[in-house]
Image (cartoon, rainbow, N blue to C red):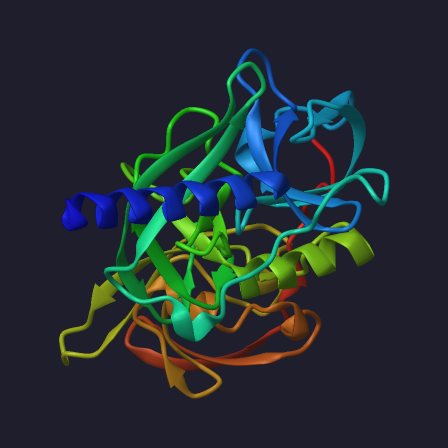
Length: 298
């Protein structure tokens, strides 16, 4: 009987965590048919996933109490699959966040989503992997890799991953990986949301090249130029198709992630020293990254 009561108490505690966290998980009506989810990140600000927000206007938010409010798009960042919406201040309780140190592999977690007709929905599991900073295939960066072993049901993208106390670990998305969801940590969401609220975009540089890893006869590795955008930053620096990029700022580059690491917003407009190989002959070039063009609205 004692064991049965203990399990019941544990179950009730978990249900209580979901109930508390449900107060800052909203429904986002920004696409046909199935709404997506969002998190009331701060007073008057909702964060959700970019890939589920299919329009830029006529967006509404359903609050936990059932109230529908109009929302305006502050900005999008496809690189991290985040979008930020603004609603009226005082519309509800903002999220409370778990400490970074408390997030460990094996922790029990819930993924939360809100479907208007059913209220809050939850998926129970564990944190299956925690790692360091990583870069998405779209060029965005997250301060920490968090992969939950939970089911991201239709409409769950943009919702919260919470711990057993109901604190937010991050925002869930199925738009950055194939076959499973990941959780963008609080630090990444806060940073990107701040940029979008201020300027409507996240600055990222680009070189205007298509590359593929290659190994040279002497064993060195680099990236061969498969395409060079006319009038792009690399073309203006004299880079040609067939060149092999060996280093940027003296650091070896063996995959596209190595290049992306040099293309943060602070690098736009500043020359980057590149070392290339052209027909076996070393070539040097200074490439000035331009800002990647990104529409704040679709």
